[in-house]
Length: 434
Ligand SMILES: NC(=O)c1ccc[n+]([C@@H]2O[C@H](COP(=O)([O-])OP(=O)(O)OC[C@H]3O[C@@H](n4cnc5c(N)ncnc54)[C@H](OP(=O)(O)O)[C@@H]3O)[C@@H](O)[C@H]2O)c1
Image (cartoon, rainbow, N blue to C red; front, side, top):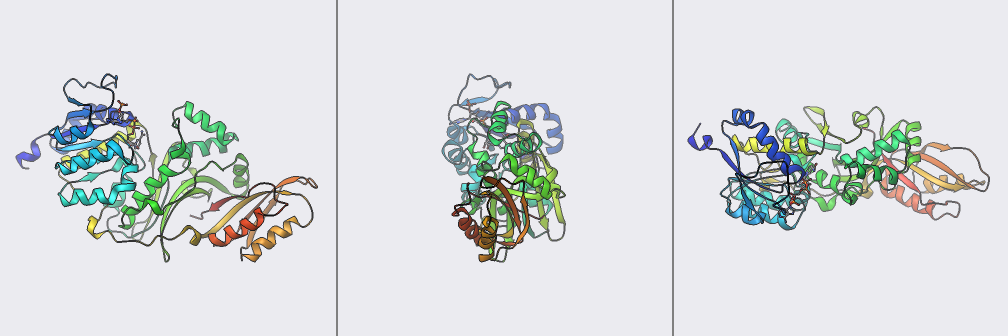
């Protein structure tokens, strides 16, 4: 080992919130283990956050403080900058750019930044011989990036799907087990700290979509393409859908799915019904899970905590250990100039089956009209459930279809929605047969 490898790896940490403070605590608590594993120490030389006076439960007396993380990236004398501020623009983006421009490696947990600017950041790093590592950006404590990029490096991956947002999984699990409505469970999740005061990034599927775009790039060797992800969140899932799902043998999960098809690369985030027997169906609460379909290794399932101080810090420090050991991997597993362009497959081309819930007036001919709207689009029904009767009043009707194309399903639903006998907009959840 050369002398340079023996010198401590000097790091500067931008952002001392949930993750940043936890990274400092972990580095302190595991210092001797990390030194043993890396053959050198990891030394924090500088930090930056907004409020200098805030008690973060860590000793900052021996490190240099910067009010401005961009100045820290340029001037701290560190070998590496850890970016834990968050957001796709502003100080996080500027800190990462400055770190790379001044010759420093970067470790980040920032999925929004990588989903939007990942390819450009990878190019900047690789052209300077620097590493950008981001294990913590996807599924927190689960080593999914290393799992795909290193563990499955000998495989071609055709599909990846997963529960990528713990807040949504917690809400859906609570709705199923308690029978409560979405708004009620969301309020509880906020009180418990599982959901943000502004929960829209989580519950509208954007956070899962950021992670999916990164995963798809690593899995398929293609540039990160967040703008092609179809995104639908969980606001429309109702308590009654869980009863019907149960009767039909399904669980409801918000999934991110990326698949290579003949039409191109599908990337989509939306609520799904999955068979109760699918391994992912029993991953509940705040847990995340990712399944990869690989040609030689076959199906691989990763499960663990997708967020939280400890699991996320664990992933950040694993990246620091890699860099301290002198290990460098192209950012997305393939040198950025060799990422193969992919044609996005539009959502309308999705093939699969569907669950549809309608509120209809209970009178003769209504069911025949619904069946005709489906038949006219070549959509074939598989199951039909009608609970109770209430002549001339609203009754819920649920149906599932055989495999069909999304575009045909949407046309059938538009016809059904326009009928006088249909009292509410139809609710549709896609069925995924994993
Ligand atoms: N929390 C998780 O479980 C988790 C899991 C996976 C990935 N991540 C990602 O990790 C990153 C950090 O998340 P977090 O939960 O730790 O966020 P957080 O608790 O909100 O912390 C953000 C930190 O950034 C600092 N900051 C904000 N604007 C700044 C600026 N202009 N200049 C300097 N410092 C600034 C804040 O300073 P003050 O403390 O002084 O306000 C705070 O210390 C995000 O990209 C997030 O997506 C988080």
